[in-house]
Structures are given as C-alpha cells and as structure tokens.
Amino acid sequence: MQKTEHKNIRKGDVWLIDNANAVGHIQKGIRPHVIVTQVTGETVTVAPCTSVQKKTHQKYVIEILPTKHSGLTTISFVLLYQSFAADISLLQEKIGHLDENEIARIQVEYIKYVTD
Image (cartoon, rainbow, N blue to C red; front, top):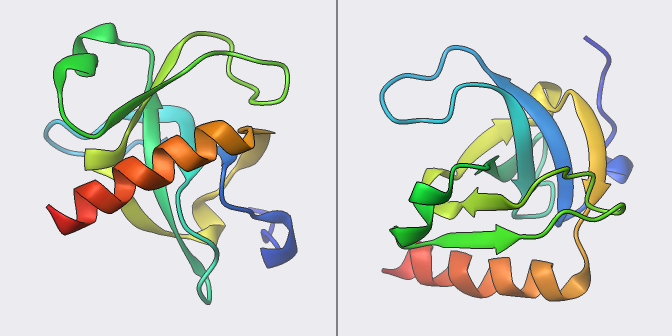
C-alpha cells in the first residue's frame, strides 16, 4: 500500500477506505469516508458515507449532494455516529473534497455528537 502524506489530507476530503473487517452495524466494504478532523500524527477522524436513505432518521447524519468536487456520484449520508480514528495508511484514494458549507454543517453536527 502506498504511503499517504499528511499534506495531502484535509478536513472535508472524501477518501475511499475498505472496511472489510467491520462487524455489527458498521458500514462494510470499500466506501467513501469524510475526513472530520485534521491530521494528528498518523491519525484522522473519519465518518463513513452511505447512500441508504433509511439512515436519515438517525441522529448525527448529514446529507451531501453529489458534485464534481466531492467525488460522490449519488446523494450520500455522512454517518457521524459511526466516526472513528483511522491510521492514515487506511486511506486508499482521495475522490474529492466537500465545499466549505458542507464542512461547516458536518463540524456543527460532529460537535453535537461528541458532546452529547
């Protein structure tokens, strides 16, 4: 696996991560994840995305529309309640970056999540 450099990772980036070993209700397989926090050492906080709309009724879910810049091809839902610390070596491919309004919406909801 190619080493991911810190300078290429920013809050709001959308990266593919393979959660092949996920258990329970954690999102499985290769899927987009949003970088929720800046790089700290070799670790970032990421939140998986899903296109399944039934997740929208849950707390700490942000809807993101697909754009050329985000790299998302369908309406996606950022599952902040499934966010986790990930070693940057897990980041496989950067597919896009969210706009400032989307990043701000995610940050507000993430703060609610971690302080709830």
